[in-house]
Image 1 (tube, one colour):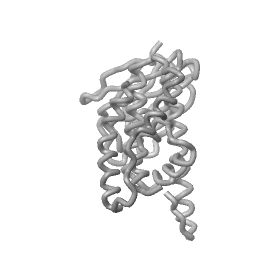
Image 2 (cartoon, helix red, strand yellow):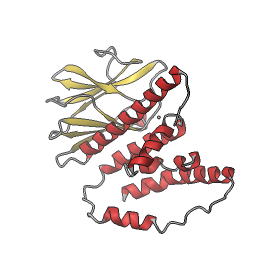
Image 3 (cartoon, helix red, strand yellow):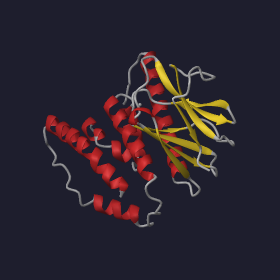
Image 4 (cartoon, one colour):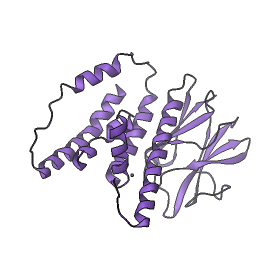
Length: 249
């Protein structure tokens, strides 16, 4: 599979719709392609947010119908110049971001002999695997039969939604239009255990829209908080909270 083809798989990967072989190839590509990592993360967050908008269970025949229709899509003719195939792939990727969002509402072979290259590849693969696991857990929380959500307005026009599944004992925070933290700082999430703040993970400093699976079990927490902390996070809050939110009952 060419690099141009791999560029077009961000949406399918975000929706866990790739077969094992293509998923493995894309995860290797993801380790080296920053644009695809950003797009995959954005599509995953979009899928998570849009998942809140509908609770209808799709029919068992939906997957078969999608696969059937795929066979009717015109394939690219062989022999097209590489530059033309890459340009097509990039154009499709830009267009697909919006098409996929609408439909939803309805690491690279690093091969080298140097040890540091091998370690870098292992780290990137692990990061991609962890991101995929987090996305799966996020989807499980959002689709849980007992999932409840509570939205709130944050500073500077941002908004946040907390989704909790007591059955799974996990929570997800969905951020929209959230300002980036100051240089060298990070937003840290906390569970509020009757006034005691328990670390619950860090947000991505490079993204204003994201879905974050909170670290650890809800375990009776009454709410969550967000503070600005030094890069890497803190064991205890070191600043006043930028947001405090109750968990949905």
